[in-house]
Amino acid sequence: MKKASAQTFILAPPMASGLSLSLALASGADAHESLRGLAAGFDPHWGMVGIGEPLAKAIGRPVPGLRAFPAMSAPGCGVPSTQQALWILLTARDQGGVFDIFRKVEALVADAFVQADSMPTFIYADHRDLTGYEDGTENPKGKAAATAALVDSGKGLAGSSFVAVQRWEHDLDHFNGHPQKVRDAIIGRRRSDNAELPRAPETSHVKRSTQESYDPPAFMMRRSMPWATTWGQGLEFIAYGRTLDAYERMMRRMAGLDDGLVDALFSFSRPVTGGYYWCPPVRSGKLDLGFLGL
Image (cartoon, rainbow, N blue to C red):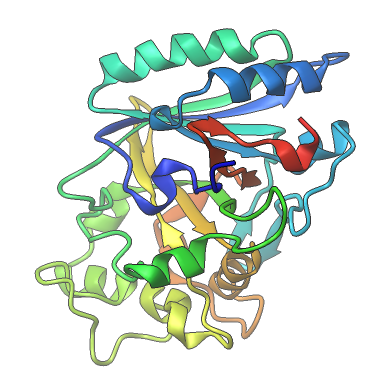
């Protein structure tokens, strides 16, 4: 039997266009049969599939380490939970390709799942956030990336990953209304060369989220993609880890729950969704749902 491997777009960046989908389990639906069909029909080159805690519970096979996304609140910020049963990220070279994949995936899940949320995503200016700052600067490289992002042992678990998916909505007019030095201080890096500020404020995003500053270090693979509509814009934050602990520790610090210092990111952006999912491994070119008994 071939060894299990990770889903493609954990260690590889997504393509230029995407679609982030969150789905709820339909009332009375047979999740077992639908997941079998999804595993058999989903091409890992189409994107990513994540199983939420509600779905794992519905089929009676809880995944160790998987839990619902926790809502958080502190003075000046709120972090909502919009946990769903299933998350799917589709990615292709252009929106036409995403549309073609979506039609195929829709047919695979339509009998048991209903769409709770969707958002088209894209790569902007060589993997920058819409603020113009580079995203994913601190991603580990090479073997360190796999160590940070992938579960390394366990029958049906090796090669899998956990993902935090969180949509942030930016007020770009407010952010861009600041002088460049103030914008750099909010992020903690210079936009011009991506260098970290030598005296970045303690509330800067860099100071709040630097992975090495945690004990143990909170390494994860960030594969975020911007989004934009006629009514708003922001970042679909997507971060993979061998556990959910690194992300959760980072989010708690950003919200000021550890020391009362809220990340300056909240001065122009706010999270509007939040979900945790388990991304099963791949075996022989198909999703391996063996751990779920499927």
